[in-house]
Image (tube, rainbow, N blue to C red; front, side, top):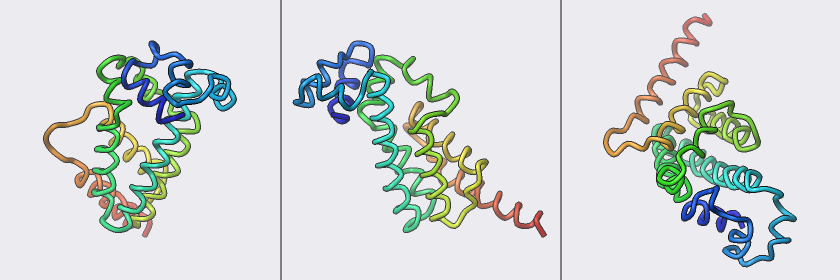
Length: 171
């Protein structure tokens, strides 16, 4: 149902998509859809949480194997190419404005926890400041994908130097 919702939101936008269209695309009865989610915002929240968890798993593995820069590139590229985000950027960019706001809800909780896990896998500080830096970097790549340039390694280096500075100041 979540993937069907993502396809519908990508093709038609969130406002234009009905719950019946999502149910039809998922091959389930509308009542079945309503047993899992009550509203379109709930459905969108569930979709975001599902996608965040999948990206976090991939990024954690990659960070442990290849480093934080590789994990950041994967996450930004994954979000930038996500069909739902691509569709929303083209059709209803205003739907993305909440991503710039308060960062509350289950999706953000999962993103913060996942980001901390990725940083830990790369042996870096996973405090709130570092998590905020990484989430802003990833979010910027999702909302405003770059055709050229790659600053993932720069962010990783900034965080590394931040860790070194903190360790020095703690002495």
